[in-house]
Every structure is written in C-alpha cells, then in structure tokens.
Length: 458
Image (tube, rainbow, N blue to C red):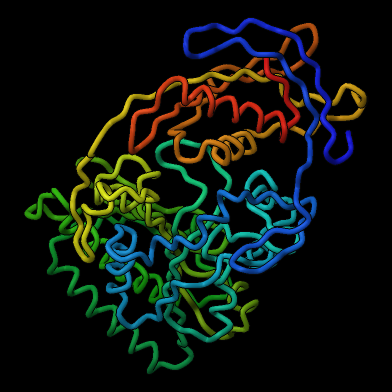
C-alpha cells in the first residue's frame, strides 16, 4: 500500500461512448489514497481521527439542521402529533447524536460480529465515538435514569443506498413504559387502565385485526409472569392503536368516513419478546408502520431497572410523513426551497403539491473493483462495498443524485477480476441540470472514487 498522500496511476486512453452516458476518458488505477485530517470538528468539539474515521463533512453539516425541531416542517408537525398522543410521557427530543460504540451496540446486546458495527454501515468519528444509528443508543441510560414513561425522538445516521426512500440521515421515534406490578393493587390499576382504553377504542372509527397469539414462535419471556406480561402487552397494543388512529384517522386527502383498518403481525426483534409489527391500510395498501414488543428483561437489568416489566416501540418519521403528506422523495425533507417549505403549517397535514419535475440526467460508471496497487499486487485490496460507493457519490454530488442503481456485474472468465456498473441519476429538486454541468459533477465523482476506493475505471 502506498504511503499517505501517494497516488499510483496507470493511464491509457480508452474510448467511451459519446451518448450522454459515456465520454472519452483515461483509464485510471489507484490504491486507496488517504487524505484524512488529524482531527475533525463535530458539534463544536474537536476529535482525533484514526483508521475508523469515515464520517464526511456532508454528514457533519447536517447535524445542526434538527428537522424534527424546525417550526412548520412536516417532521416537526408529526413529532408534535406523536408527542400529543402520549401526554403523560416525558418527551426527549434534543439529545446529541454523538455516542460511543458501547452505547450504540454493546449495551443493547449486539454481538461483536454484527454487520451494523462495520465501517460500511455506520459513521464513525473515531474508534471511540460515532453517530448513533438508532434512538436505542440512549435506551439504557434513559431507563437507568428511572424515567417510567418516555418518548425519544432524534436524528439517526446510517450509510445506505441512494434512492427516493433512503437517506443517510433520518429520524426515529422510540417510546417505552415500565411497570411495577409487584402488588395486587398495581395489577388492578393496570387492568382498569386497559379496560378504559379498550372501551374508548371500541367506540372509535377503527377496525383492529389482531389474531396474534403468544406461543412457541413468539413466547413470553421465562423471567415474566405470563398474566402480568399479558397486561403489559395489552397496554402496549391499546397505546399504539390509539397513536395510529390519531395519525391516520384524518390524513390529507383521506376518506374520513371509512373506518381505519390496523393489523398486528408477529415479528422477531432481539430486544423485545413477544414482538410485533403493525400495519395500517392506507389508500388501498397495507403499510408497515412500526415495530414493538415487551422489552427483554436483560435490557432492564443492564439498566439497573429491577422487578419491572416494560414495553417499547419504534417507528421512522420520514416513512410516515412521506405517506401522510404524499412527499415522493426523501431528499425533499432537506430542501430549503421556499416552494417546499411554504406549503406547510405547524399542526396541519396537507398534501404536498409538486412545484416542478425536472428531467433526469443519467451517467453510467463501470469499475474494476478490489484492485491492488501496482507495486503491491501480492497484497489483498480493500474490499469494495456498495455503501462506500454510495457514500462517496453522495458526499461529492450531494442531493443532486436522485438514485444509484447497479445495472451490471460480472467476473472476467480469464482474469477473475470483478466488474460492476452503476447508473447514477442526477436530478435536482429545484432546477434543470445541463448535460455539461452534470459531466463536470460526474467527473468529480469519478475522481473521488479513484481517490478513496481500490478501483479502476473501465
């Protein structure tokens, strides 16, 4: 491997099709040049970098945006509506996204080889600090603080593919409630609460399809008394059915006379048991809304919460907002264009009206991947991962990229070399892009790929 700052080039002129997808360009090979600074600044704090550092400035710049706290923004309205569905819960919505790998993974029981820990999936400041990949990174601490009922709403960060429904920054809601059922009086109180909530739902305009049973495939935890666990589970279901009714009973453009239909489906999550997914019938389609269940006892014990049961749920704000507001592209949530922002008012769910649909501009890029440097061919190359590719494309071209799709892959029958071809769709949400402008951007993308990955452009 070349030293820091060294570039190894092999250049030969090769023809590229002049049809807008290809152009004349030299073939270039390089071996993972490092231009990492010795430190980076995140939220006003300086951190040393190391071999784990992979967070980009594009991502760092999004941290202060806090879309879920921005007045009139759809995510803020949705946050407020969710919080209003749990008036007795403590709302936590401004925690820093900087967490340790221990908080993000170890405290939740993630195994050492879990793929979520990898550099291809998560953003690391350095080996000791990262951007949270889920709101659960704060779960143990909140439980440890003895908060009995809480909602945690926050921005989370994951390296991911590029398309209209995926973005490296999105927002999650996590809610939980703990129960002390150590006396018959407290059990009776929960029974009465459940009865009142069930009666209210029965008189509401909602049809709940729930044929789930607790059994061998989705059992109660061995540490729990089955009857007490059934009360906690019933309370969870009543709360979430009420939440979904609040969110979807009067959607923009929806039929307010038809009853809302909700269905419960058994699921598996390592941190709850029994576990469920909940779907809602919206505009003729069943949509997965959230996951939930009774919190694993070992999570509570690890949080110093003893002799209690708890339930928890989690959902994604963007997924629900895109449905309720009819927003077709997740990039729009980050738009600062007044034509987007002016359409929304705090507290109201209104149908998004597209203000333009600019034409796409496609550019293909073909790569030999996992290429070693010419002077160290005997050593293995840095393995190619699609998330690395997408992160570099997004970091270089920003939100001008609408989606990236792999359109071809093959292994050369004689050399064994692997080739992949991606089609990058450049389309601005705010204006038309000229082919010449896109060529310049695409050239920067190609250079960034060469500078940061073990690849050769075909």
